[in-house]
Length: 283
Image 1 (cartoon, rainbow, N blue to C red):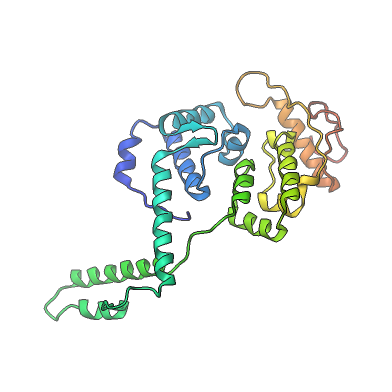
Image 2: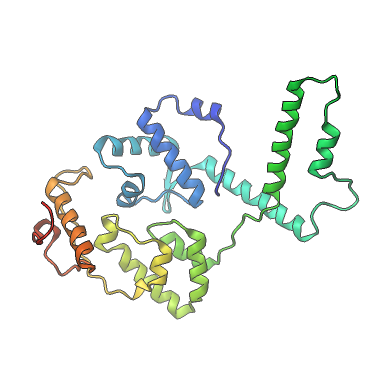
């Protein structure tokens, strides 16, 4: 969904206890949920990268919001009210699509165009300026309503793609990814290979660190064929998800090395905690 109704009074009533930081994170999660039409991932590395959580207070605020407004299942963190609204939205889309296939508006009923309705609503000479503003607002509402109803907004995805999509660690750009899936048109054997490759990719160090390719690019590049050397993730100095200075420095050095050389840092290098100091890289 690319839009949704926002009820300000209901929102303020339900979130009066939140801090300003928690408000910001909750609104980001709502937008994310409506856009992807799927539960919030439980992968903290992915969540931290997508929501740009970098401090202990931000991560604590995220967990507070999840605890207050979401429920956890095998697929991730679910929001009951948003799930209901997404379901209702697609039901309306299906009804509009069915009516369109039957020829639009039901026959036998007299309908009016926007211009005809405006002509009937024109004020008399005795009416005042506020009434003219009301008619202008009516025109905006009618035009927007007809524009929305004339669009086909529902995308239909194959069951095989849906299974793949649920497992992919970064669920963004679903429509583009599905187009690439249809272009590849994988048979049963290739689907099995893609699934195996995806499982290995999910366990890779890059994914655990939050460096995840967009799904459409992963498919275009046939990255299920990559040989991935999985290594243990870097050790944290405490139970929080904060990186030490040395770890952040090592990651930055690796990224700069990749930018300078145009090559990808391979897993058979030294661990990033002991990555070499490359010539030409500012300290």
